[in-house]
Each structure stands twice: as structure tokens, then as C-alpha cells.
Amino acid sequence: MRERPETIKAVALLSGGLDSRLAIKVVQEQGIAVYAANYVTCFCTCTAKGSCKSEARRACEQLGAPLKVFPTTKEFLEIVKNPKHGYGRNMNPCIDCRILMFRKAKEYMEEIGASFLVTGEVLGQRPMSQRRDAMQLIDREAGVEGLVLRPLCAKHLSITIPESEGWVDRDKLLSISGRSRKEQMRLAESYDMRDYPCAAGGCLLTNEGFANKVRDLLAHKDADINDVALLKVGRHFRLPDGGKAVVGKDKEQNLRLLNLARAGDRVFRPHDHLPVPTALLRDSDSEEETVLTADLCISHSKLRTEPFILVETYKYEAPSEVRVITAKAIPRERIDSLRI
Ligand code: SF4
Image (spheres, rainbow, N blue to C red):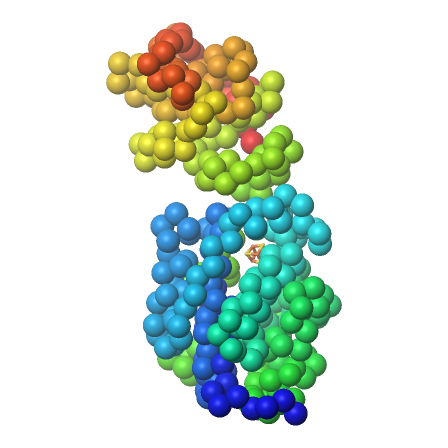
């Protein structure tokens, strides 16, 4: 037997969704002091508004658990580019992602003198990372074998160190499995937990449309965080010479595009305050693609039936060198063939 710590601490991976909240609650009920770890990446559905992070914060306030937020965008982006264990249904590299999270949680566990990790995983709930073999692989590669307690489905899994050491009572753990969420709902009711957003997770990489854009991006360049941020704004087009055009959908997006523009980009703005969207042309110096981007601006404006419209354009690094292009709308089939 290991020496029993005076106060037993555990680090719980917290998404802000229901399952991780329930897992924390089940472990807290056994007198364990739980410290929550939340991970934020540029692929979180709600990073822009900060709601995932604030959900985690709100959950921790309700649960009385201290929260540590880990910004993992840089490391995670490298994983998305080349995941050792491949992708799920879309571009979600769930196994490598969990390994990264567990490694970070382990470091935090050691830093604060905690004894084990807790997750809200349910056996069989997610096809890629919540299978028995995948859970074992993740624990092994993250160096946390035997240290991960999954309270919601613990009775389906092998005994972990916190159970064998008597830090937690296995009899009080649960045996939930599968995709139905009925048991979790019932448990939430019994704990009087009522609002729990993000229950199904908040990862853009599982979204088919977004995953297509990521796939296209990675096929064309060694993308960075700005390239990923750009994927969340506007309509995206892959042009004939390999450049990328992005056309804003509304005022907010037009502004966001201007904020994301950087050296090398060509910016397209309305001439004379005409109702034409803002656009960016990235990774291209092609004249054909410059004119095509101006045409795409008109094609997505109220003025698309006009024979021609003037559009201003300049290189980001030379904003005073404005050029005016005579642009016109292009046929729908051509637009569709360029759309990512
Ligand atoms: S869905 Fe996204 S955040 Fe969740 S494990 Fe998979 S890759 Fe990671």
C-alpha cells in the first residue's frame, strides 16, 4: 500500500459539459479535493466568445473546485497536422488530443501533489477515444496507466490505483456505458444540476464543413494559428493558382477579416462606400486571382446584377498603394467550383 495522503487531491479534466461535472461530483462525494483542468484551443467552438472557458469557470464555482486553464493551441495545431493515431470521422485527432491533455494533467497533478486523475469519459460514448482499447492506449502513451479514474463507467474498467489504495470506494462508482445520456440526466437531476451547455463537446474538428476547410488548408501549406482563425470567418475559395480567397458575410466578419490580414495578404475593400463585402487574398500574387477575388466580392454583394462595379485593393503592407479593379459577378457554377 502507498502512504495515504492527509488530504487526497485529484486533477479532473473538465470540458464544462455534463459528464465531466458529474464525474467531479461523484469523486467529491467521496471526500476527494478536486482540482479542475480545462483546455482551450483555436478549434473550440466557442473560443471566440470565451464561453467554453467561462462555462468551465461557472462549473467550477458551482462545484467548489479550483480551475486551471491550459491554452494548448500551438501544440494541438501540430497534432492536427500529423496525428500519430489518425483522425476520427472528420479531422478530429481524438486519441492524440487526449494524450496531450493527460500529459498536461499529469504534470499539474505532480505540481500540486495530487494523487490521480479523473475524467468524465463513458465507455462506448465516443467512437474514437472512448473505446476500451483506446482508453488503455491513451493512458499508456500519456504515462498515466492506473492513475485515471473514470467514475461514470469505472465498474466496466479494471481497478485503478485510487481504488486499490482505498482512496475511493469502487462500490460507489458507476457503470454507465454507451451513447444514451439517460443515466447522466438522472444523475444530474439527483445532484440538482440544471444547465449544462456543451454536453456534446465543442470541437470544430468534428464538424464536417469546418473539417473540409482544415483538410484543404493543410493540403496547401504549413498552417499557423492565424490561418486557422481565418477558417472561422467568411466564405472560403481555393483559386486556380493555389491562392485562398475569403469573402466576408456581414459587417462583423468584414472587420474580422481586416483584423486577421497580415503581410503578404491582399485586401479588397468597397470603392466609394458601395455595399460590397471585404475580402482577403492569401498566398497569391497572381493577377488572375486578384481579379477573381474582386469578382467574388461582387458576386456576393447586392450589386451582382450590375454590369460592373469598382473594387479597391491593396497589399496589406502597402495600404496607400490602392488599386481600383473593374469587377463583375461570375456564374454560380464557377463560384461553387471554387468554394471550399
Ligand atoms: S473532439 Fe476535439 S477536443 Fe475532443 S478529443 Fe477529439 S480532437 Fe480533442
